[in-house]
Length: 271
Length: 271
Image (cartoon, rainbow over the protein chains, first blue to last red):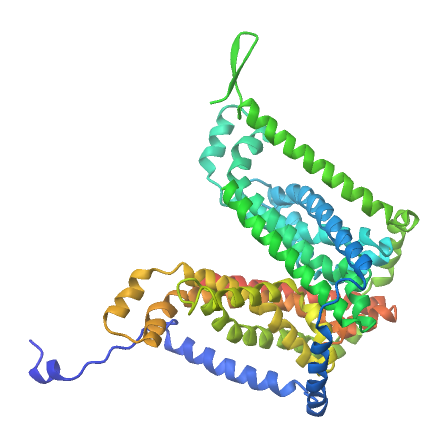
């Protein structure tokens, strides 16, 4: 039956299709969000008097940052930055070297079941704890100084890099690895010629990214005594030398920008 | 293809000699840098502290078992605060990251010369400074407590969310945007119907991913007074209550694994 004239002439509206198609899921999510927000915001005790006192104090605090004082503590700052860089380089290298066996073991298509679960366990533990918590323990065990920071960052690198390596190996093309195996290659040759070339370009990019992360983290592990620029920064805060602290933060930002820029350049060159 | 003649027969090589030599040279330079860094770290290390580390570790481990299950009732509230800091901080960060990303993406920014560099600087500054350092500053301004933690998490996450979001905006299909514009839509309508639907899945994925990271970050903010599970952790470590420390670590481990599972499920459902 053809539609009646009225139906054709009636104004028609178009509505944007919703992101979540099932209506009840949409409603449940909405109601859940509101209930959660009410609960969460209700349990924050905000001390409004403290806050209103704090705002002018915050303005003075930020005013104390300007102008950044690069020269006053320059020796401490440059020592801290260099120490951070040493820690970052050493930790990235050691972490990546150690993460290769773990990553190989955590790839489902290479490792036997028992090894797979063991390596996945290492990755889960290493990824779960924030660098600071790890640093507290390594400082307790190894004493104050950059060694504890380096071990912390290496351990954190294993979790990050090992997991991504394992996932990348799982996504490799099995046929080229099989072709290498068909030539009668041994296990090491199989990994080196069948798997390694497939994951290498992405892994170089990730190594640079991890270097960047390690540098940023090296700026905080110092707060708990693990060396690097974080120790200098913490001292600057404790002495209320906010102009020096501002200088340190600006240097960190500049170095991170530099690493990011050069790593995007290297990545383009590798891929 | 690179080959070499050995005893009169052609042998296959992966690379031509000059390329192989350049790669070896790069490795050698890398090794020198690494050894140098290691030397500088080792100079600053007090080795007697390191050599007795295994004994220390065994001692610490013995003091940490069994976990002090009785004190778990006092830990629910800090854990709830930790999750709230991560969730509310992420929500706040997303709200603030959207305009920054809009200004940073090449195809939507109002001005590439004036606005885009400012947006990019906000992104880098927010990413370079760790949540712990933000918390250190915010505790001074607005006082210790969950609120400082929420703002610290939010300030740290703006850069991350905005960076991934503006990359998603730059990758959209311009055809659809042009089609919407061709119907005579205004600028706001072009954004809502041409751009938003294309980036919404990426946007949801990024927020859940950052939420998962923030759960981990918010566990340590208590160390500088910003609320959450870090406060009892710090108290337990300073009072040497190791059985309670191990309980807190177990709770953190469980929470992080659950949040990672949720985040992976949600991202899997969206993408």
